Amino acid sequence: MTPGGIRAFILLVFSCISLAAAPETHVVIMHTNDIRGHILPGPDAGGSARLATVVRELKPDLMLDAGGILSGSLISDTFQGEPVVAVMNAIGYDAVAVESSEFDFGIAALRARSRQANFLLLSANTTSPVDEIQPAAIYNAQGVRIAVVGLTSQEITGHPQNVKYVDVADPVRTLEDLLPRIRQRADTIILLANVRRTEEQRIARAFPEIRLIIGAHEEADLPMRIGQTTIVGTGKFGKYVGRLDLTFTEGKLKGIASRLIPLEGFDPDPSIAGLIEPYEMKLDETLQTVLGQAAGDLMRSTARESHLGNLVADAVRAKTGTEITLITAADPQMGIPKGPITSRTLFEVLPSEKTLVTMRLSGAQIKRILGKTMLSVSGVRVKLDPAKPEGKRLVSARLENGTPLRDKDFYTVTTNDYLLMGGDGFTEFAGGMDVEDTGILLRDAVAEHIARLGTVSPHLDGRIQFSR
Image (cartoon, rainbow, N blue to C red):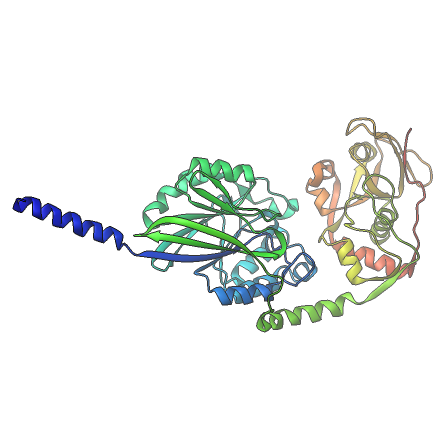
């Protein structure tokens, strides 16, 4: 063999040895989604104290959540998400994607939660007054640079008052603009994507360089793979936590292994239980108050007159003193069973923070509102034809004394701030005169009404009828 051939052979041998000996780096990521305030254990929730035990045993390099953390449970809603963020700080979360429900308590509350958080709130495609929300973050995990990008669904929901200054852009176009700015600064890119499955798939096909998407869906599923992209999720309420094992060779992602870990069966971390306890004690003290008695089961309905719809509408009119109440029949989330009516019961029945709004509307405006869909009403008796298209269902509308509503006459009306802002498509309320948001919570008005009555009986009086 010639000297040149020997040198080439030696170089080839060393090259092979170098490749064979290329060190692997392992990064562990744990993730959750759609906790929705369920930091306490329950039938469908593992509880944050158990989650903390698992996290501290496995010691992940990154702890991530794909959004939907704040609203959805009594303990969280009562304190506007404060206990949830306190628990997530203690567990050691690094980043959380922003879901539209994070705005449920309003801009000021979300700003307070973002300042309370030791983790980042991420959404690359959301513009809002909450300046603390960042598009992305880059973490160094075991020497690997990992960019984490947050995305929010364009189908933003929630109270119009809370999201009127929130704008959500197309996620694909957002990534087209963002990725060139982070490619050279990161070894791999992970999405915390609070979007629909179809959007996840669209993103995976458009950006094959994104190897991992941590999604937010209410059901826990097996990982989905589109090309080289793995899509994972853990389901709602923290029943499971996800573990991802990422393998890198020379900074390049070579493999992803994923599994779901059920929290049931793990011992709760006492430090987390102790952190939650003061919130529980304060909540229990408030919610044990007995407001009155239900003489029978008070049923709710969004399709016909109901005991609970009448109670709520009458309570609102009694509080504000207007001639008419018009509120959505879906305001109560559940019925009230026979027996003591406590503050806890009322929180469960009316969990939202809607406020009462008074105004003057013409008879013609009221008729257009009543013709859209069934509402809970007080001070007016209506007949509807459900066979007719939306907007034309009203057959007749009369005041309690039997006087027909006159198109050109004006009437004092109470509704809620959600409908005033166009919620559920009710744009007519925005045309009211002398509009005043009283700041009185719908729930508080009902609580006061129940306390004044003492005993509430199931009551239907034919105020909503249907033509046959």
